Image 1 (spheres, chains in turn orange, cyan, green, purple):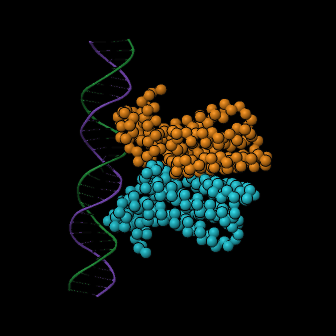
Image 2 (cartoon, protein in one colour; image 1 turned 120 degrees about the vertical axis):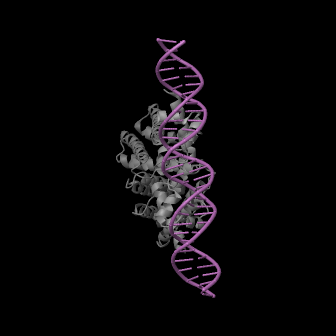
Image 3 (spheres, chains in turn cyan, purple, yellow, brown; image 1 turned 135 degrees about the vertical axis):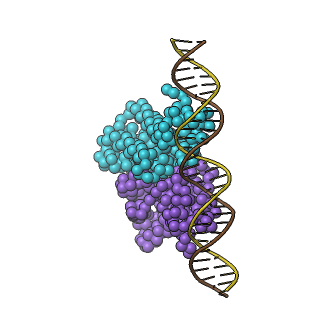
Length: 188
Length: 188
DNA sequence: AGCACTCTATACTGATTTGTATAGTTGTCA
DNA sequence: TGACAACTATACAAATCAGTATAGAGTGCT
């Protein structure tokens, strides 16, 4: 792994989340990363490519972490979908949490033809499909319906937490998720 | 009412939603509004003031519309909170809907010390309090808890709809809301 | 007619943006 | 020692940004 490329990615991720993507210039990024623009543009053709790389890495990190957590659980499929929001809470309440990248990116790039928006949209869909699979494994009848509801709770709670940290939105979403999951299980 | 000021506000609202706030320059705004920068800066001291005015007007419009809808209903408090997401769906699925301003603004201005972020945060809180009042009128025991859950559903569904229009998120949120409301009523 | 007011037209400042060109430095490996 | 690669330093181009200065056009009131 190239450490300088990783450093640029990590600094960009952090600055994009805390200051916004459009408000963060490449000059700021290289200054904080302790390098120069020439090096940045060696690894990323344009700022847009850098943004896409940041989005991809952020989503990968989250998905890997969640997969490990759920995979290391070893319980029944029912227990695993029940634990989903426990882990989301753990992720979101972590001190290093600054938001979910694709949620912020889709707001800053609202145009559906924009590549950044399209990637955000794809990642949102991927996470929903991930929940759908959890629901299917648990033999839930309307797995897609439940997954859509849970993904809305997820995005809404993250959104609320981005607006105001420590708002208790995650705890509330977790409780709502438990209610919805219990009912979906009963109906199956 | 000053028509030119209104025109600038309306054009700004539209451009901010469809292209993003930071990506929309004042030059673009005045060009689309068919006026000049001198006029814009006569009514709004800075671009920040313009953004704040757009946020305020958007929120006012939404709240007024919702108040009228719920007020003209005349049913029992129970029926009114049940109808909340019907109206939200009507608002969101309207062809002119381009998103909720304070949700996008908080993403573009993540810093909690920023005035735009603070106003967004306040509007999010105001809408939650509005739901709380609906729940209290319906004699729901944990009115604040239900209101928080419903506001998360609202923000999540709007977020999902901003990422992908026609995703069915609103319908799904409406269904989840009904479930959560029914349970909260039973527990009261 | 003359005044006041709103708005337009246009050019400008100064800062900041993304991206590049050019030259020099540093460390590594043979 | 010498070559190669990664990286730094700096200066620059061209566009765009927010905001201002200046001069004049149009309209209505008295």
